[in-house]
Image (cartoon, rainbow, N blue to C red; front, side):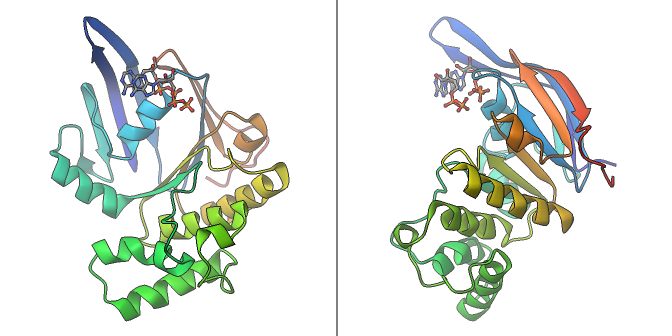
Length: 233
Ligand code: ADP
Ligand code: ADP
């Protein structure tokens, strides 16, 4: 019984007369509550796979079932709806609205979900407290440190209780100490039962995950439990 079921998916890009097989054949099953690090050299297909996992793109072949929903060949509109409900994104560059406060940034997904202002503000406040930023709700991104910005982004990713958190190099713009803090936060989130898929180039960062998936040339070349973590799964 899997949250994510990917069966022999491929994704090709056609540029002029050339076909680029970014994903050749990828099969991957992920259970609710797993913490997976996705690794591999540049060009191996990580971003392409993350885009499909996050319902930003669909495969050229094969099947993707997310939380029981077959999203393999959905329309853009249906895909956007699934994405808003099921996926929380965390990016390397934080992707916060620069003119909005921390509270407004975190509350944003709740506007699309149709909650009224009072509920949005209460929930966003709580979410910021949960990431240790209860005293920074009215700060704008440029009034926050990199680590604090990423905490805001994590709070925003979690606000709709998504079924998966997709984090693409979340520590890529942070110094070592702050990276360790953010990974500590990811571990806390995982411990609360959330499912996390994290792309990273750094072995130290991947060590926080419970399962390591390595890609190469559009294929999964390795997939194993992190031997350094006593998995509770
Ligand atoms: P990474 O995910 O490793 O940080 P990127 O996803 O930015 O790196 O790019 C990985 C590779 O994919 C690069 O070789 C880049 O040139 C290529 N790439 C990314 N987007 C496109 C695109 N829209 N068109 C062509 N090539 C692309
Ligand atoms: P990674 O994230 O591991 O760096 P990508 O998924 O970005 O790998 O890229 C896999 C392959 O697909 C690369 O050869 C890249 O150049 C190509 N690619 C990625 N995105 C595009 C795109 N939008 N158009 C054309 N080629 C792309």
